[in-house]
Image (cartoon, rainbow, N blue to C red; front, top):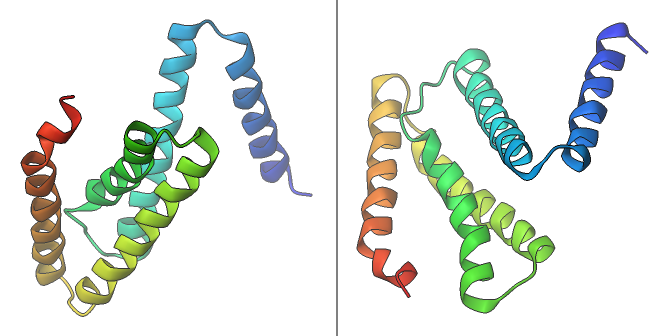
Length: 133
């Protein structure tokens, strides 16, 4: 096993262990940092390695979060199944958007992803009263 792999596995183990030790405030901050780190890694893969600049990257993040949060809020689904529903919602949505957006390259790809992002944003704004109750 390489030293880099051992280091990364050790770091993941330390961060996982901190979840059980830290007070609630620091635990919440650590969770937010780790979620945003995954978001940044996904963006790095998309733009850094694939060379596709997506202006709608947060849209997939939002679909996954709404896909998890809505079943918890509306149908009182427990955390585990809601997590899987959120992953499935983001995967299905990304498949649909990907089939359409990956037909373009360059600036056209940026515009298509921005268009989908704005459509999701306006949909969330339109259905906002659903969460008010």
